[in-house]
Length: 79
Image (cartoon, rainbow, N blue to C red; front, side, top):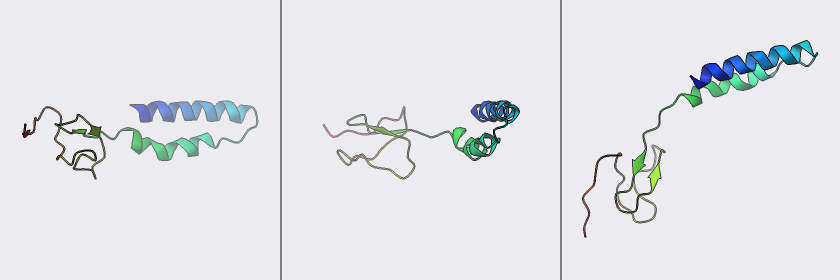
């Protein structure tokens, strides 16, 4: 959805700037960003401290070393 909004905004801005005699480079500026806006990232959470990340490369909490879990899945805690 955001990709279509960006594309439409880019086309409108390019048309307005072109009518004023300014080259329309905004179209080519925003098109490469469209695939990055529609990615759904799965958040992972530390069951001990609550730290969250969306990075797929991080599997452990940087503060306490606990394995991260998906939201809604409670890990076992050693109390």
